[in-house]
Length: 59
Image (cartoon, rainbow, N blue to C red; front, side):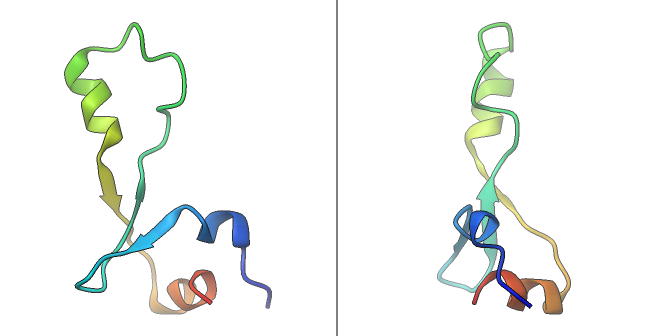
């Protein structure tokens, strides 16, 4: 099975081995959002996946 390269580029592996990615919905339409919501979207989110899926995306 091929690795999904477009999704793989959005992931980052931390030093402790956790996989994190950017939150969704933060590219536009942020002017009306509250500041706390804007900053919350900037944080990296921990990604929860099964082990087989993780291996597929990190090849």
